[in-house]
Length: 118
Image (cartoon, rainbow, N blue to C red):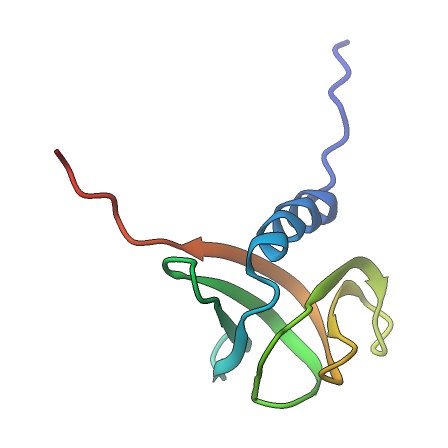
């Protein structure tokens, strides 16, 4: 029987987000949207000198503390953490900005302008 390596979704999300945050920390972070049908808090980060923005999606947010807009962000993601609800999930923090968000799931993506064809 073939044994496949164990897949850790938390680790994949954590590593990808950590890479993005290295490029975008120091910018302006804005809590843009919170939806109700599939509860999701969207935070967008904009940084001078970077094209586009970083989109952070806190899915099923259970605890939200912080300012709606803050400059010189220094956001960190903690993955596979026991939340106040007892579930395992993610915590997004920015200590200097007094930000703390607990969520059941998380995703991040860079939204960059399309390159022009030659």
